[in-house]
Image 1 (cartoon, protein in one colour):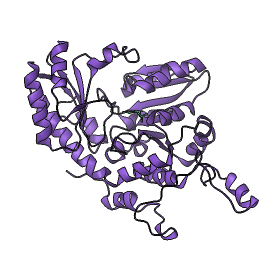
Image 2 (image 1 turned 90 degrees about the vertical axis):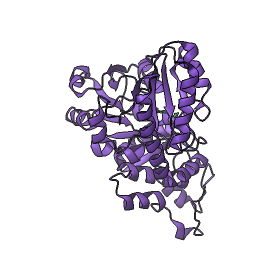
Image 3 (image 1 turned 90 degrees about the horizontal axis):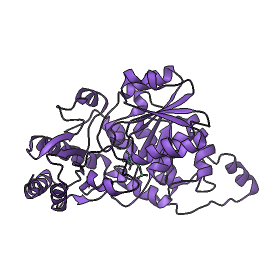
Image 4 (image 1 turned 180 degrees about the horizontal axis):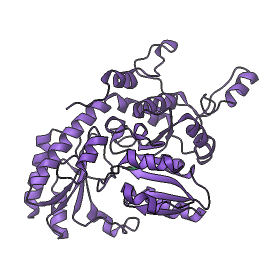
Length: 394
Ligand SMILES: *Cc1c(COP(=O)(O)O)cnc(C)c1O
């Protein structure tokens, strides 16, 4: 498989951009600035830096060189001007959303975004007088969802449980014509498989915990946008809420980026092949994966995404809880756990949500299983699913 990404440009961003080796000691790997603050030789130097706190190292909640290097690479990968890094994807989403609204404003958000994004928009912001409408994600339904006080359209394409996608370009065009800011959660695709800013979006948000980090060892989040938007968010949510990424995590995520393309390719290849395998399996009722040709949105997916990755869900051909659990309990390579985008393969059965106070309002069917195909070989993963499906008795 290959993408139409300019490979020279990609190599430049991942391995050269921003790596000022000659002013240091020519390190192969960039330095980790594990410091909370920076010192100055004179009052004047300190004063001058303080006036540019959003771009020069003064205090690490604002700027730190390890974070700046990662931010520059992520902005370039997404085709945006600038980026801000956060302690988690949720912190990035909260800052991006909160910066667009005040009491009395209204948000239009796609149905069933990431669970904590939904809670932010519905419950948290509701307490501060911001209202919201959740809509189908169809362009044709958007005008009816927008109100005179709407400020923001929030997208997640695809979402990370049922993988519905939205026509990003058409929605962003409508939003622009109506003076609405658009935010797209692009975690599923990573910057390698989809670039919403190039399709007209104002802000892209990522859970860097997933593909960008890729090793299940660091939480992180990022937002990518124009320089003026970055400045606006820096001067309010970024500095006041203070959910900054730690330099250590920025360094780990920089390391993750070195292999991003290799990992995405393997994950995509595994994902495609496993989706096709499950689609034909008699114990499986339905597979949710945007790049399956049988998917209702296949043509849109093929138009706006370059690849699909290793995350998908499927419904088992039963609603009997003991069979669903028997299947999951017999998986050997797919570990039971949340998250995705890393080296290991994972399984998250929707059945676990039904008894959890935080998630019990779920719209997900009890027989829905989300799996993430990691970096193992396809045969290993296929055999694992095959034997567990067999033992489940479905
Ligand atoms: C994981 C995830 C988030 C939240 O990111 P954290 O790093 O866990 O805070 C947001 N959106 C999507 C699509 C995710 O999968």
